[in-house]
Length: 130
Image (tube, rainbow, N blue to C red; front, top):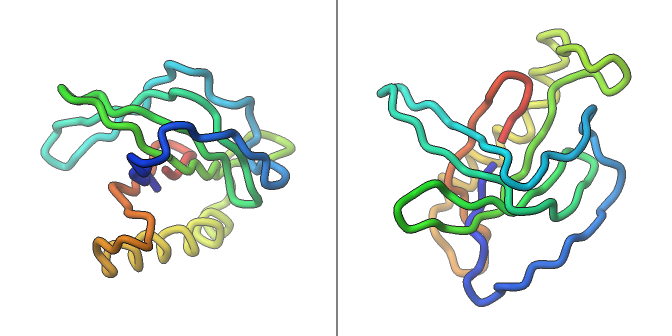
């Protein structure tokens, strides 16, 4: 899920929150993430820096590729087997994705609120859920 960073907190410190679930190395600064829309139009973000990891994935500071760039926090959940690096069976992918999809759906239904982190987008690219 991609979340808007608070403007009143320009300095975000990297925090390690537990073991990373990623089966690969961290994404490097400058790495491009392109989200394709049903219209064929795409929007992109690039990695600014790694912020931390937890039991469900890694969190990065990203910047949008818009005319006026915006900084956001992005959680990435990898849907691959940690040991082999291969795609998970569909049943396991669904089991891992379900809580993140529910979280994104609830956040969208709640709408904007000053005490909640907002959600900008949720999307799947290959074996990674953002």
